[in-house]
Amino acid sequence: MKRKYITTDLLIIGGGTAGCYAAITAARKARDLRILIAEKANIKRSGCLAAGVNALNAYITEGQTTRDYLEFVRWDAEKIIRDDLVLSMAEGFNETAADLERMGLVILKDESGKYVTRGRQNIKINGENIKPLLAAEVGRYGNIEVLNHVMITDYLTEEGRVFGAAGFSVEEEIVYGIGFSRHKMWYPPFNTGAGYAMGIRAGAEMTCFEMRFVAQRCKDTIAPTGTIALGVGAREVNACGEIYEKRYGLSTSGRAYGTTNETHEGRGPCYLRTEGITPEQDEELLKAYLNMAPSQTLKWIESGRLPSEQNVEIEGTEPYIVGGHTGSGYWVDTRRRTTLQNLYAAGDVSGGAPKKFVTGALAEGAIAAATILNDMKNIPPAEDAIVRAKAEKIFLDYERRLSDAPSEPYDVFAIEEAMQKVMDEYAGGIKNAYRYNTGQLALAGRYIDRLTGLAEALTGPDMDTLVHIYELRERLTVCKVLIAHLRARKETRWPGFAVNTDHPEQSGKYECYVNSKWLDGHLEVFTRALVREGEYEHTH
Image (cartoon, rainbow, N blue to C red; front, side, top):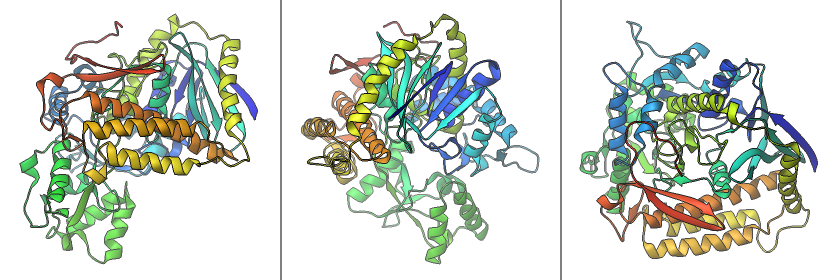
């Protein structure tokens, strides 16, 4: 495979929301800084904003304060949050929203020129093109280079210090060794767990993986339900027509649990009650979903019945491990430094600060970039020989896996299907209504270890198969950490996200963070006391 070595001042892995904005922030503040974004897809349509969004769900509206947002997140996450991270993030919401508007994002306004709100923390936008706008802004800075269609698989580390990364092209037989002279910032392709897994293998401390996210979605289309619930005031009803939402609480977890439990107890299917809304509201919903989930608009049109003529059936998704909505991710200090020297985290991978959404990811990208620029004067340059030596070991593994001979006895898709089955059946998946017990988790752990061993023998004939092999490796690593975290929290704190049937109640003993670190081939799991307001610095 052809080798390419690149040297840069700042490497950003993942050109999603936080990654792009970190690059933009750094470029604005340091015009002579060489910045490289490495993205597995293309930054114009990558990350969770690829299809667009119709609201900014984290905004300090008139009459609200950053402290109000902190209290909201603390309540919704059952107290397991980092106050310092949520507050510092919230302080940047409105500024980043205004910056998006300057880039060309349409934020809806009323007759008096004020932003149109949707609830206490939301403002409405026309956001189908939000990611292309961010990509266009990146392109305005001559000191930012974008490397699209390159999958980063490993950090290059030595003695707890990150000094580079290695990856490969998803289209050509080219491998990349990337070193940098002063520092590193990181943001992952959120949906495969690649960035989490790189940090886990490198020994970074991680937090709150057991705080999974089960989203309430429109059935079949997986379209978000908030636009219906907040936009037209639709209530959650079961098959008997009963409004059940208040019985379970109105937190994100409570809403998810209500729908799951009503169905589990035989009162499903469940719906958002839209029958009887006005023609104007019909039109509003049809347009709103074109901004982020066109399949829902198409479903209404193809059925020949608008929302006012039929309630919208809802269900839960597979459990997600994503720090943009819950608390999973790297254990960071207030300025977004991870526990690995030269490695910073923002957006979906920064743990402890749920409900980031768009503006929170932007704000964290800006915070991380500012910290990097401050720290870089004390970071020594990486030696080119060390970068090449470390990268070469990873390149050899790529070449070992690139083979015309078929994998024996299983291929990557068979192992991935087995992995999904294990996690669904034994680690609280949809099949068991997000319920699990200690015995099931023990089985899940053994099965995942077995599948991890099988995955080591996988090979493939082309770069596309190589991508699938490494994505499977990342997912299996995240599975292992998730199972360990679920076993460690012996309570049920977020019933809509997971129910521990051995410990079905919430316990004051576990009003803490569950953290982990990979050390000498073993995953160490431990707890840390809650961090409240003020500044937090790593002392370990």
